[in-house]
Image 1 (cartoon, rainbow, N blue to C red):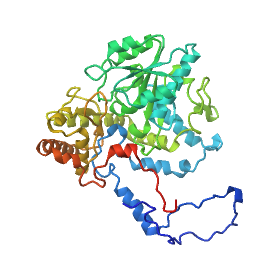
Image 2: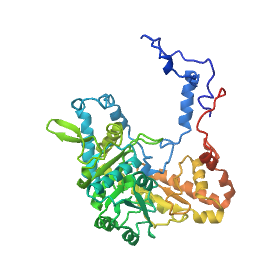
Image 3: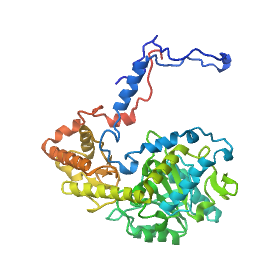
Image 4: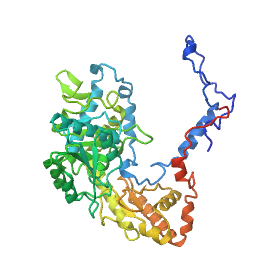
Length: 479
């Protein structure tokens, strides 16, 4: 498709703007742009067609099966958007006096109360703008806690080898050191390796449970106890909370602090860098270290306060208000039974799909899973030359989105499949049939896979070149 600049024809214009009814004010010469802006000249119908083509080139949950469940490729109820667009919420300003937005401040306190109930925490901040930002905020709180207690030497964060890649990056940004420990044969934390890693310099542990392989660690209580006895704190990466919400609580597992991807688990939009929300919850032991603008209920109403040992402000004002307003709507809409039902349905869908595929694909970590499962195509690649990437590209030709590829790093030729709770059995059966068809085709005509996809909007691309030599701006003829 053409870029908007390629649609441009000099001299085209739109008579859609009414004549200016206010005095025209010219900028001083010193403030004027020295070069003319490159603005496209496009008539209104072409503008509409351009954005329609862009929309049609994008594959989303409305187009077909999208097996990235914990990344919220589930249906986002439209009532969420209706609430966010409600004028009393949509038209507020962050600098308004608190007494004029008491209803909006109740969104903070009510969302906090419900998330505390779901996670087993005592307090929440909604300032962080996304999951990794929530990780960073949590680590700053852990660091401040140890420094306040006169133990600045506690600067080591233990991270399993199956962790999300943002975990060690967040540790580095917080000025701490990552201690990587291996997984055991079941894809869970190696207990003996953990015992060997903890010590007087341990600040904490970062862990996802269920982990990236879709396995709930049966030793979780022992794991958090080991870290606590060494003087560290336990941080829960909430990326996979949708597998357990309403059924099990991180706080009851021994975790002291948690971030939640509201734009994943609680059905709010995300993608393209935002808007997201990486709300951070904590136990009482860390409550005094929360970021600024913590809402509390007083005799005269709800007001923002600064916790006693606050790490400061991690984002402008109060966070992504319309995002956690959507999350609150989702939680209230589902209720306690609906929240647990969503988790149970996600786990059921994943186990059903795993059961239907385990006879043709290698499953490294057993015959059951939580909300996601990992298959290895290492054997298929050795037999046919068809890689996990080739299979993923082939999936695109079947009006489906491929699963996560080559992650976790502990599994060779990995595909991580996450059928969300909103998918029906019929749709999952269709997806299973495609996977089986591609497996058969890989053995019959393996050479064809290196050209897939053949029917998608964009055909096979040179991904190495795209990563190393990206074209990120349009070059105009006059430059």
